[in-house]
Amino acid sequence: MNDPLLERTVHHLRLALQGRLHNVVNGRNKRSIGLPEAFWTTGQTLRLSFLGAPDEALKQQIFTIASQWLDHANLSFVLTDNDQLDAEIVIRTDAEKTLNQSDYGRHRMLADGETMILGIKLTDPDFHSTVLHEFGHALGLFHEHQHPDANIPWDRAALRRHIAARFSDQERAWHAFDKTLERLIRQNYDPITYEPRITLRYDRRSIMHYPIRQAHTLGDCASGRNHELSAKDKQFMRMIYPGKGSPDLT
Image (cartoon, rainbow, N blue to C red):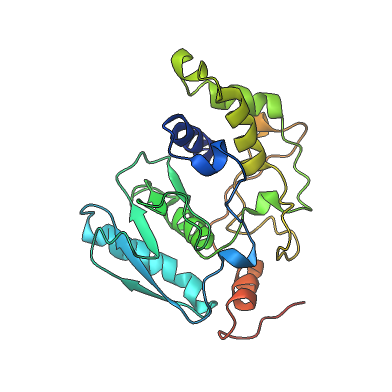
């Protein structure tokens, strides 16, 4: 099973090795997951731009799938020319198929590059769910497995082994490798504790819930991939970007 959460953590660690992830290596984590300060302005039009010259069919499919969120959020998308780095959402598609991630809302990880990577191919059976998941992040949603009530018993030793195995001896010899790895595990796996934050009930069916591998947990805690927006996903969008139906806060 592809493990998008592990791939995300490996990618962040590679950026840190390259000196491109200063917010992780040099102090406070600035990702602001699920915090109101990461949300766009209600009613805002978000420009989507692709890096390079991806196939037009790929761009249109991504745009169409991403727009499913707009049935429940008072926002708009517009597709702009390629390589517009000042667009709100800048998408890179020339990546490994296992590398898919997005910045959270309006907080950028890289000031001069992409805000989203979609390496997944159009023919992949998980293409639809992956695009939905990453655009959930782009609209400000955090990972559901990090909900304070999720209580996932991660096997931290196994996570360290699996992540470190993706790097060479020379890379692992970097003086800050172990410290950065531990920080990234906390950032990508541990429950969210930031305040103030907006949370609804824990939702194992959320499109924002990653699949969980049994090999990465203690006990019986595996789960598969979700493929569509859940009722809670839609509710959350209506709440933080009101104007598309009732917020339905029950």
